[in-house]
Amino acid sequence: MPWISGSPSAASRAARDRRRSFARPPALRGHRRSTTSPSAQNTLSSSDGKLSAFRAAVAESARRRIAAPLLSPGCSPSRPSPSAYNALMKSFSRCGDADEVVRLFHELRRSHPTPTALCYNTLLNSLVVANRHGHAEALFDEMIASGVAPTTSSYTILIKLLSFYPNLIDSAYEVIRFMVQSGCQPDAITYSTLVAGLCRAGRIEEAWGVLDQMMEDKLLPTVQSYTCIVQCYCSEGRIEEAKRLVGVMESVGCQPDVVTYSVLIGAFCQAGEFGEVEKVLKESEEKGWKPNEFTYNIYMNGLCKAGKFDEAFQLLEVMRASGLHPTIDTLNILFDCLCQDSKVWEAKCLLERSSELEWDVDVFFYNTLMSRFFEIGELGTVLKLLSEMLKKGIDPDTCTFTIVIRSLCKAGMLQQVKCIISSKGFVADVVAFNTVLHEFYVVEELNDVRKVYSYMIAENVTPNKFTYCIMIDTLCSEGKYLDAIDLLLGALRFGFFPDLVIRLNNWLVKSGKLIGILNLAEEILSRGLVINVSIITSLVRVFCREGYCKSNNVYKVCLVLDKVLGIR
Image (cartoon, rainbow, N blue to C red; front, top):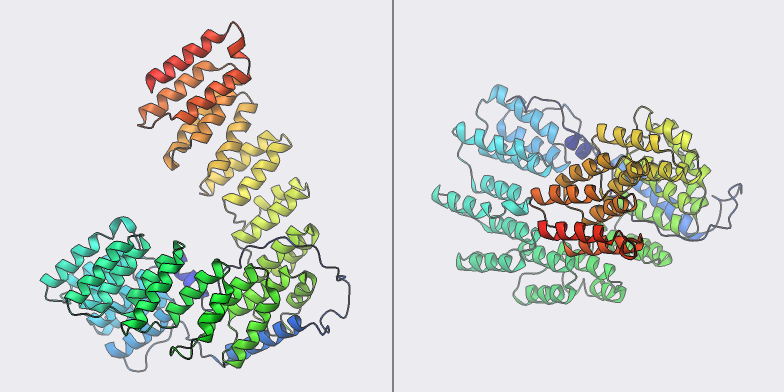
């Protein structure tokens, strides 16, 4: 099994890091710059309640992190039995470290050439969760080839894999039929997994049909089954239906759990219905469930997004009073609140003292603060924060470079942008590259536009519609119309963008390259695409705008339109 003994995948390395990481902070909104002087020496000794609360939360999080036992990569169970290995594999799987699960499975096979179905299931599930679906499929085939009979859990994990792909979810029914023929009866978890996949594909009515099938098979739908449908309703903005479903769960004796209510609270927050959130929390004890850290983080994040910063910090005290402790996600949300609530300089001071506060800062905190400084125009501070994080050994990510690139471009420091792009370790997404392309185009450095675009393609960054707009404008500005047409035709493999056709047609009409319009139309049609009404309408408009319809050249307009409509 070469893939089992291979090097760790990027996905698994990222999963390993998730033991110490958290979600990307919410998008920052603009506020006026704080009147607090950045040179004030007494910032951290301020009696400001929010700063004090944040420092206390950091200290509490640090104490709990030190007390928490960590698994050591490379460790082995004290007893070399399949059950002992499976227990350790499950522990690493819960941490999201698929590579360690693979290593232990490989190690187990040295003493037990045929691992148990339970060991196979643990590795299967770990690979599916780590998004290593090809490896999971290969392992399932190997399990059967080794003579190990798949269990109900094995087939359920296979259905979980299929549920990640909306176009493959129908194959889950085939898996259920096959497992029944093999003597394995689907259980409530199997059906719940199928319901989750159908909801993920937006097929709610079909998910209800699966619940009916469960009842026919005398299997009671689980809380997880209903919660998937609640979440689907919420994601579609159908909050009233989600509320009614929660009520139905309560009436049929399937008591919603903390996950169900947390999903509902998230929907209320998104809709700005914070009164409903308070009502749900107030009734929690009466209905037999207790909010956890995840619940409060959702509520806190909703308050922060709505600009209710005081209420978000007050919720921290409610958490503590309930015996709950701030998580790394809590710190992330509260730090974002500080950055938005005109406390950006104070937040910077806290970040500078992270080591002293025993605060385990990573790239997400820096990105949050750098984004805020960019928004208030403190571009020099953005660069200083980049330097500071590099000194601390914190690696910038794509988001970091995007913020820095945008800052440099806004300051007109295009030479520095060139240096960063060519530097070792530079990683950027299409947004960062588009920012650079646009700035070089604005200052008419068209040669640099083409160089950056070539570098972008070489780095396997997929262009989007905005990228192609810039490149069409660049090539047409240089009179390279054939190259522009080739570029547009190459973009068709990523989807058909009528806006790009309209943009290129405008350039071709302005320059009198009418034959190019016909050639482009023929190429588009030859690929099975349709020249729609918006393209033809825009073509007529640009002809009129350029004066063709009021001159002796009107016959050219008629000729082009006749041919395009004839082709169409």
